[in-house]
Image (cartoon, rainbow, N blue to C red):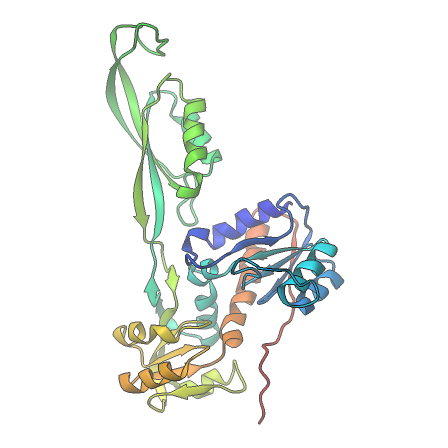
Amino acid sequence: MRVRDLITIIHRLAPPDLAAEWDNPGLQVGSFDQEITKVGLVLDATPEAVARARAEGCDLLLAHHPLLFKPLKNIDADSGVGAVLKAALQGGLTIVSAHTNWDAAALGVARALADALELTDRSPLEPQTREFDKLVVFVPVGYEARIREAVFAAGAGTVGDYDHTWFGAPGEGGFRAPETGRPFIGQAGSEARARESRLEIIAPRSVRDRVAEAVRRHHPYEEPAFEFHPVRVAGRDQGLGLIGAWDPPRDLFTELRRLSPAFKWAGPRPGRLGRVALLPGSGGSFLHQARRRGAEVLVTGDVSFHQALEAQALGLTLVDLGHFETEWPGVLQMARVLAGELARRNLDLECRVLAQNGPWNYES
């Protein structure tokens, strides 16, 4: 398998159009054409993670956090990002990221944290829609399968877990070919009528040009009639964060201590709670969404002083469980889901989680 093939599978699980505008998921360093046999999964591509991946024979390091967020003004090969880039290139290790696209995916980071906390009755804290193009193309009867297969091969026709999706309806079309034309149906310079099918097939915007080229190449008409319409699709359970329930209510601190040895909190002192909002990573800005959704607590990381004050004013319990602690379950989830997808496709690629710890130490 090549790197580009794995990225295609990852994007099926974590569609890139779900990523925030400021984010930079995908290939970080390496080659799309590199052959790979073993993948190591981590939260961050640190020098230690690269060394561990190389020691265990990994060809690719799949990190949650992108190594490259902003344009680099210089590359210091002895420290920071530069040291990671140098080690990866010297070791032939490709680094790929699935970040906010995995955060917002239906099976992503929030789902993993909710699984760890055994929450039920779940829905996204901030639902997201995906933007697609809908291809509408008119095809003479008998050529529908030819066009469908061509645009499927170009990347169209996938909705959620389903692929090769389409809609068709019969009709009749008319036209007049120019005197110099070579029409598939009728005579040059004369009006003609044809029994046609209207095909509608959804496609990611990123493949619009490929789909258009596939239609032109495989359509029997000199001038195929087709168009793209923008559509928004509300996928099942996709969005940032998650709100869920404990039924019957549980003691919040008892449940959180299973995930982290220490954490801080603000707002009302919690006891047994039933309605819980989660935003793994840095989610203190989602206080108002959590309150509007009826949550009694928001569990997140990287909480600021002023966000803690805001939680007090809202009467909402705010827990800073830690950035690492709230997102690490998402790394384990990616390993499970990716391995399952590879097995479903009968692809022989080993996926291994490379153990990491967060940067904080705790004194008892």
